[in-house]
Length: 367
Length: 131
Image (cartoon, rainbow over all chains, first blue to last red; front, top):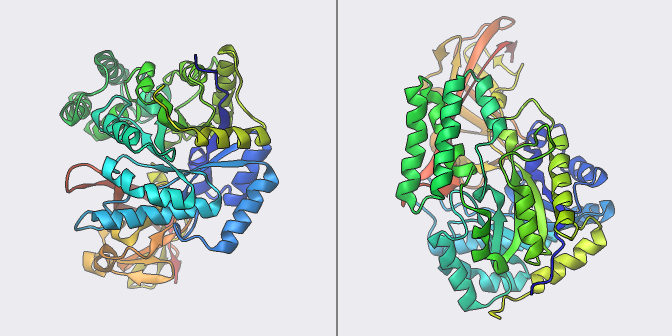
């Protein structure tokens, strides 16, 4: 019987992209706001978004950053790093170049005090295996993000899991992104299309098409994924709004994943970090398209004591509401769900630090 | 993404023969020069000749051919870049400005050899300032 878990509350600064990009907050003032308004204690940052010159991190900067995080009482969880294998216009990175590219970012995570580096799907099982010595050298856990249009039982994810099992390193795992297991096309995205003049008939058709794919479950392979993408484009064209087609396709297949919540059980012991992906909060204070309560319950019941970074993605289209209130609303749902599941979300920094260290030290066993 | 922020309001300047405008990245993270694959600057409906376009970033000026191979200079999300080209624009008058941008997203690989690119566009009206 698994002991129930108490996940750590937290946020990724990605949620505040509009405010940071709009120069309303710089890095320091945003971190101070996150702490002061209680979005932590967990703090996740995307290296290439927030740190000028990344992945080069000067020691004086790293010192300033770690002092700031300690002063405001936050706990660094994951540094999101990128596998930019298409960085050259004429070719993809070679395998040695990719390993070097990732190594520099893993080193940056350690320098900045992040125990986890979120890595991405283009890393193969071989790449993950090659990165183990780098992870060990810097004591950084590599948590590969399972993001729509992938999902836990996708063959590529299972191949990674099987390799992790064979290697047996506690520093290899996954980041669970809730966008893989949504239950609807986000109403706030539909509202944004409405504001761009899309007809009610077209909007109903988009929702109905997504619901059909939800019934069918996640795409079995890239061919099915491509067909679904194309069908959203076709729908926009049929309704005389072809310019909306790509956007429907990207969101309908790449943001709102149709796998079931229980699919996460395939990789549950290897989940080292969570992106609490969501898109909005409705008039009842609930997330209408992400089953936040079911996901928190699943984590609690399976003994998860790592961090959940609230990851608000509605900022892409929602320019009319404050992200700060929406994120506070989603975290309230998480806390309520954890209590309903007989546990709680950790909001105390010292408790979070200890819980995260214990969580990352766990080795997956086959017992 | 945030295409409505590409053109910075009030930054159109003219030397008489050349015009320039400040632009923001419509993306959440820094990208290197190699991922800034093309731009178009159109003022009052007239596009600047492609060969005259220059990209100013991190205190340097680049042609788009130079950007194509540059993985050392990065466009940070808080920084304004400058797009300039040969266009005669009268100062102290109002003009329409259109900017098109093509960016490669280097971590999203959509086939064995193809990287995702995004085409973004912004349109604003502003008064030109004499440089």
